Length: 369
Image (cartoon, rainbow, N blue to C red):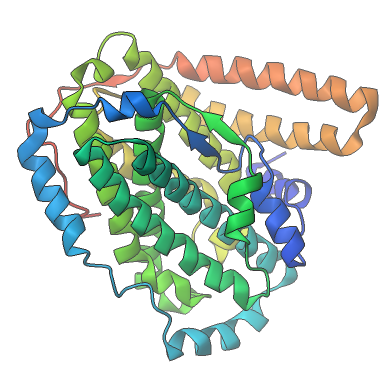
């Protein structure tokens, strides 16, 4: 099976059809290996953080948050409504499903950050952490609300209050939150800016007005990542010794999840003039460039084993979904085989040699991609 065929098969088998608000809410609540998760953490440990070693950079960043340069950005204008009315009827049913999947996944991810940051804010007294979490929760709330408005255009709005109450939460130690959320924010920037630049070059391929907002939007994501970079650089032990193994794990887990999930949306990328694989490796490359500010290692995305492993994980995920659809004893056995194959493949991926480098003296970066 070639890559394109595998992608199309993946769409047919993995994507739950969304035809009603109930379907949209069920998809947002559902917890799978590929869906965005909600997190909680050790609030006492968060409260004990000391960022005094990066105080100068921290204070500059707080002034940027306070300035709130996007306070008036997430407003829909008349042109937005006109584009929706004109462009949406042109989408094929398959393309409509991929776009809805993209919106629901993006909303869930943004709202996940909003909830986590707000819960930390409410449960700490540390003025630095409390102030930061207040600003980041503000930003993520705007992002989630803006996406939800676009879902409401399809009469598929998500009940965010219900989502907060009913979706499962995963407990992560603070250091896991730092690694995973830093990567999530930075890869979110890389994803959005890559789409924005592509549609900036090819405006005829912009099939929905929401993409016009992506540049300033992803700068929020970039700044959030900068915040976690400062926290990690203020706690040097998080970047040394055995923690390097955790850094490698989270980079690979985030990249693999993105690769498999994105290949369920080939029509979405094709409509933008992108190919899922090329798009993902562009995002990997930007994210790897950015992460040099804080991670002393990076994965070699050009290593042949890395590339083969990404394709292998995609095919295993496809096979696992076929087994789930089949059900019964045979389906469960095949899912078990797929789980073993995925673990072995990820283990092989984990053993690919990493690229090491010295951390720069200047921590902060600018979103220049």
